[in-house]
View 1 (tube, one colour):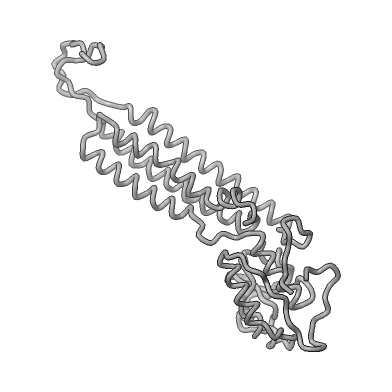
View 2: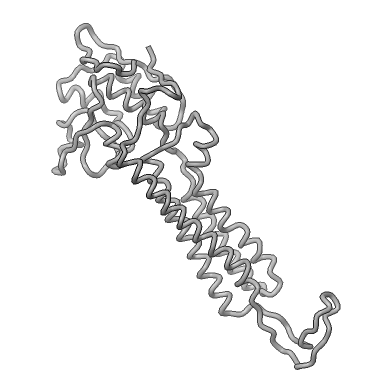
Length: 296
């Protein structure tokens, strides 16, 4: 029978209290950095790009036929060099704030992910870094090209720098394979059905946790840690190893007959697909003791 969980199932994976607290802190810091990036953009648009110097004026006042304002006759308005350099610096600062914010936001999502079944929230939460990057750069780049006081060289350089930095910040902000409650629940359910309990092991470094502490991936000289799948995620692990069959064998534990089928399903779930997770098929007398209320 396939293992399934409803959107409100009590068997769904939940982050530890510490992980959720850390995720909230990371999101607050990311939000502050993004607000600063957009603030820098506003300064550039509403103040910096309005700077200009008048050169070549003969001192006489003439009325501009278009605006009706008095201007210095013979003068040309140019974008000051100091403002141009400041604009380039602001573009770099906006990119740095956007990128660091996106990195922190992704770390928070690893600790406390959204549900894939909640489509809108799942998309916004996981792609917010890319959305912020577009918001922080696109209006400014447009205003650079529309600026009448900048010469062609200034527009070319500032526009090119802005576009390159915007593309980099957007790419960093995109999460092509975001975590989800469903992914973590599939791993947790697999562990419980293989071992009879939500108990895994891991070491510092690497991205996976294990079902056996005797395998070479664990015997690295680092301290071996034990805990639940939620505690493993809180320690920076992203998923259950797909080599669980050989690990079970190494520790002398029962190996389900359909281990390959389970591994293939987990691989597809971890890559973002929605598939049914097969229940382990045990030989007579080999199934582990199942804890009370474990998902089936």
